[in-house]
Length: 136
Ligand code: DAT
Ligand code: MG
Image (cartoon, rainbow, N blue to C red):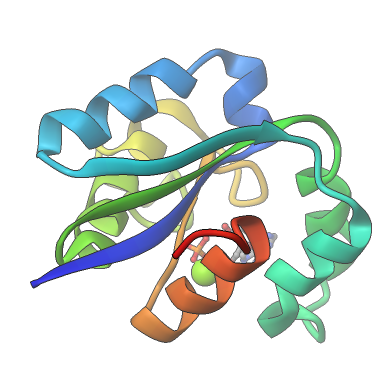
């Protein structure tokens, strides 16, 4: 059974020049790319994407950060793609993320952790619709 997940290479990842590396890790794992776009988010889209964190104290900074430059949005597909990509990404706190993961290898600060990956089938469906409303 194949599933889809929304992946973002966040603005820090684009600035650091690791877009190719993230895509390469996705492809090496055996996952497929279904959609890919470089874009800069409006505050409205960012607030929608991160709606579950609206009440958290870091929400304003999170929206500033994610709208602060271009990001790369991807839809990635494969067996257990949601869990598979989150394993490639590593823990949310990059200091705790295992070396060898994307965050474990490339980041130090929780607010700038290079990538996003949907955390459940429901989140994936909701997030894919925000970024790629025309995707069937
Ligand atoms: P994940 O991106 O691993 O799904 P999350 O959904 O809990 O993590 O949080 C979304 C993003 O918000 C996360 O990638 C970075 C930021 N964030 C989370 N916790 C934070 C904190 N305590 N301080 C600052 N930023 C935080
Ligand atoms: Mg999350």
